[in-house]
Image (cartoon, rainbow, N blue to C red):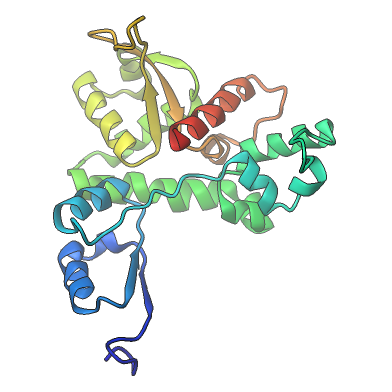
Length: 257
């Protein structure tokens, strides 16, 4: 029995940040087999590790869900503004100026539900996101998963990428800006993509194939609000706002295509 409940009880058991438990997939598999009527929900910030071990040990038992950042429509629902700003029948905006202001807010903090619903988190985006989320992934999750020895080097690279989200970059320029050797840089980019912090977009030819030996590509944050957390909010007339809008559109497309 589990805490006085019978073996056939319909219960939900939640495990948060499960990737820090040694051999979590083996233990979870055993629990699933032993208690078929209990639903086990495991979450974690190390998406790459969870996905890899889930596929290896949980085939037929585990179902993977990726929880992307809030979309703009979800942001409006969270802030209870959707009914006031969007016509339910036509989908057209009823107050374009207010809608535009809401979109600026979305770009700067709307990707994180906690920041949307909690003013203290919103006012301390740098501390909450940069220290609590980014540092945890860059300084703890990725080094432990991939054996990265120079965490500060990885963090410096991510800062360069976040600042230039929506821009075209190249390996040579990134290597100089982040002070990272090109061979190491390639590995770091793969790690950051596996951690769901960035996405790369390459040029395609007329047949939909990537060009060979590409050194130029575009970098996008998976959540535009990450830039505001690291470097402060961006006004609608700021130089970075255009690339941030592009980042938000690309993130929506990548997560829903």
